[in-house]
Image (cartoon, rainbow, N blue to C red; front, side, top):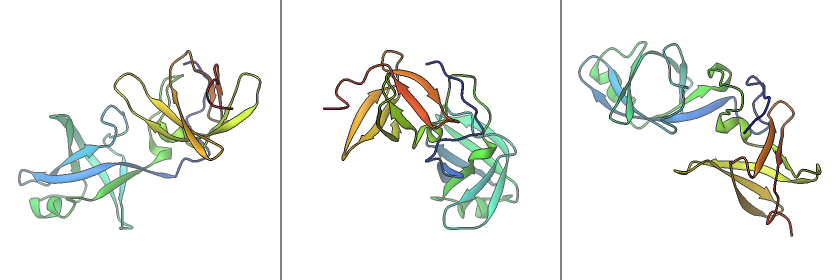
Length: 179
């Protein structure tokens, strides 16, 4: 996919705080905690990132990140013992979208695609991006078209220009999306 998108202009449906994953059990006695990321391949989790826990107004800063066994081990500012780490177990963590690292041109955070207007190559509005699904082969857009959802593979054959700043995603093909 090729596109010129500004990473500081998330899609129309992008929330300011984005779900990143869930805390698991503590690791050791020093306050480290296992974390299962919703998207383990994302470069989002990093030292200095501020997290907000669902159901709490408190924010906590990551002071260390380690990949281990397909998950992460996080060290957090102010979480210095096993008891404090245990208190996080099961909590959902969100990160501020504005703090995400920039991506190379042509790559997008899923959250930035939400709410984009989907148009065909003639500029006709077909629907909006309602969700993005990960599959082993490639991502798939869930496009809300009228009262139904249509799946569109995120491959060059189907997806053309993505302009996050303009809130628009152009398809190269639209067979099956409109009747």
